[in-house]
Image (cartoon, rainbow, N blue to C red; front, side, top):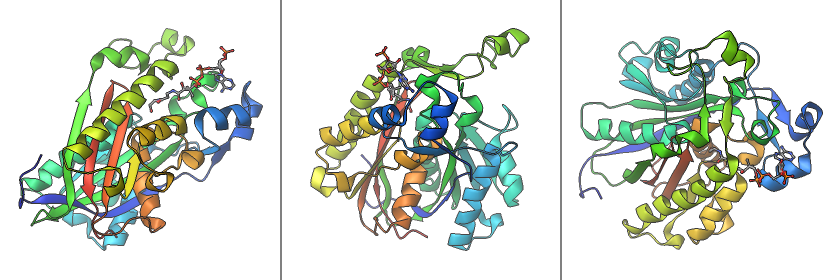
Length: 336
Ligand code: UT7
C-alpha cells in the first residue's frame, strides 16, 4: 500500500484504434467447422477486427497514440517515454516503441517493448506509474497493441475464433498531491504455466526454419481449459486482494475493467467480487481477445460512453501467458 500525500501517476488521456476489417462469426463458419451459436455461448464473441495486409502493430499503436496527442493537445517533443506492450511486434527488434517514437516525431522520448502477453498493458502501466512517481519523468505513453490475427492458425478452431487485433493507449502524468491516479497494484507471474499458452518457434529455442513453418509452429497454441480455470481463480484473487487492502467493498467500485479473454471468465470474476453487471466493462462481443490491447480499449470505451467521472474507483485486472497476472486500483481523473 502506498503512503499518503506522495506523488502518483494519473491517466490524463486515452486513445484507441481498431482496424477497419471485421471478421464475424459468420465469416468463421465459412472458414472452419464452427458455429455462431458455439462461439457466442462459449466465449461471448460476435465479431473481431483484424489488420489489413501490410497493416502492423506499430501502425495501430501510432494511431492510438496520435489520438492521445490530439485529445491532450500535447506536442510530441513533450513525451518522455513510450512503453509498448505487445506479443506481436512488427519485428523481434527493433522495438515497436522505437517505430512509434519515429512515427510520432517524439524527439526527446526513449522507449521499449514489454512482453507479458495479456497482462502486458497492466505491467507496463505499473512500470510507467513508478517512473512518474519518481519525479524524473512527466509524460509517459503506455500502449497495449496486438495483431493477433498474424499469429493465428485458422485451421485451429479452438483458438483462432478467440482473438482480434487493436490498440489502446493512455497518457500518464503526475498528480502531485497523490489524490488520484494509480493508487495500488498486485502483480504476479508463474513460469510453470508457460507450457499452456505459447508460440513455439521463432525464438532461440526453435529458430525459424522450413521445418518449423511446415509444422505450423509460428502460431499461438493453448490448452484452453487449463488457462480458463487459472484465469478465473487468479484474476479474481488479485482483484479481491487489491480491493481489500484499499478498504474497497463491491459497492465502492464504479467500474471493473478486466482483460477480455472470455465472457464467462469475466462473469465468474465479477461474481466472486460481488459486482453487478453495470459495474463491469465488457466489449469482447465486438473485439474478441486483443491480448495487450483489451484493457486500454476498455478504458477508451468507458470514457467515450461517459461511464467514468473524476474520483471514480476503478479496478483493472489481467491474466495471460507466462502465466502473468495482476490487478490495479485506480482513482479515475479528468481524462481527455
Ligand atoms: O487471454 C488469455 C488466453 N486465453 C484464455 O483465457 C482462453 C481460456 N479458455 C477458454 O476461453 C475456453 O477454454 C475455450 C473458449 C478456448 C474453449 O471453451 P470450452 O468450454 O473450454 O470448450 P472445450 O475446449 O472444453 O471444448 C468443448 C467442445 C469440444 O468438443 P468435444 O470434445 O466435447 O466433442 C471441442 O472440440 O467444443 C469443441 N470446440 C468447438 N466447437 C465448435 C472447440 N472449439 C470449437 C469451435 N466451434 N470453435
